[in-house]
Image (cartoon, rainbow, N blue to C red; front, top):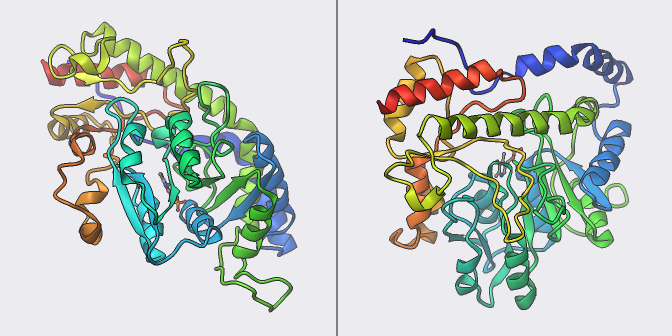
Length: 391
Ligand SMILES: *Cc1c(COP(=O)(O)O)cnc(C)c1O
């Protein structure tokens, strides 16, 4: 039996230790200034993120959820409207739509990219459809060419949910958040770029929308105490921006480390005979671990996947998770319940027969540790334990 190791799903303390000497003086500077909301640090972050995402504008907000909410409010989406989105994502993607009294319309996912299946979108479009929100799940850009073609044919705006995908690129090199009309990002601590609490940002190339979103995040106020429309308190704190300004220059290195970790898992799963290059075609028999892969085009060029999560599909997922836990390995399930099965969305859902893929994903996906500081030994240990499980 191999020696037991400890492999947490995520260890944020390691990243903090490596940046402590840079971060602490900045925290003190914000404390001394007592300029606590928006301000210089937020302006600096907005400039840097706009540049990083190849966008003209970026508007800092209070969370990824509020980024999505403000984006929908800027499009004046409300009662009687419908918004198309994947059935399989984090709750916020659908929650924001329902909060505005609009109807979230769920679409099944693709079995290997885990993103919204573009070939299914068109049949859900009707005269009430006011937006499409593709999610770049786990850090891989959805099939944006296909999605935009349908959206443009019908004159429907596309809002990218980039909460898990900052820095991810479509196979043609376009950065997520610059492809649709707006991109909504989260700085929740577990994302690839995480703050010291909640935070988010919205990117766009549309000047009018950028102006509206700036006003939206501050109760629609302009000038002071005059409100021509209703917004909310979606403002970003200076302390979050200050921390994120320190972290952003390291982001590309962290992406590369996650990608290296992902490639090592994949290589080891194949070497152990647990996964096959054949992919989905042979999932079930010799292909016990369906490895998450960067989708590629006929040209052979792949999406630039930033692996916010490394989630293989596994048949006996729940038993495996128990076994991993007994061997001190952290894991998580993103997500155990697809939207159409959430009690709060019952009135938007049919009998579930439209969602064979998201139903399968919800019982098979498991997130393994992938964070940048993970060692090669830890990854080998995880693969050894999984191999042991299948014996
Ligand atoms: C994290 C996340 C959000 C919400 O971001 P918060 O900053 O936590 O509000 C939205 N969509 C997806 C897909 C996410 O993963």
